[in-house]
Length: 151
Image 1 (cartoon, rainbow, N blue to C red):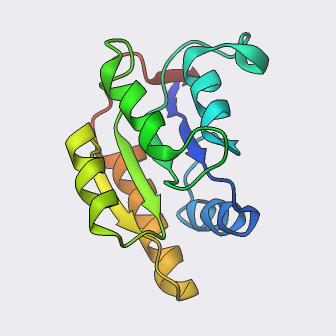
Image 2: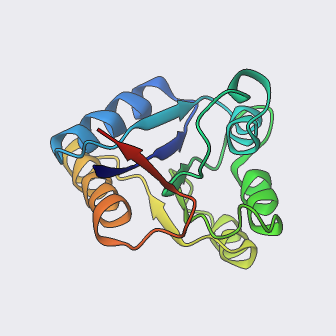
């Protein structure tokens, strides 16, 4: 059996979702990538409620979290994750276009594991996401509860 570790991508921009999925795919990662379109849906996924009540148990190996999302923004999602004993060990990477110092400082104050500004240039964006995927899904040791057994 192989350990397949899920990646949660919280991103409301369809173009950025496609680019991120493409970059992760180019890395030949076999990981399942779950895409949610806003912060409320990200929380529903993490707490296994709403449409995600029946999802498999276990936390994602990493959350790639956009900062500016509808319903619940990335900072609020981060705040809730890091305040919850059952979720706080999940690595969270802010993957955002915001270069605002306040966003960066607040993200780290709340416990973000990394803050990556989305490069505007396509090849740099793909390379950044590819490196993130490989690091968090392959190299980094995941906390217990984030691994799902696969075929």
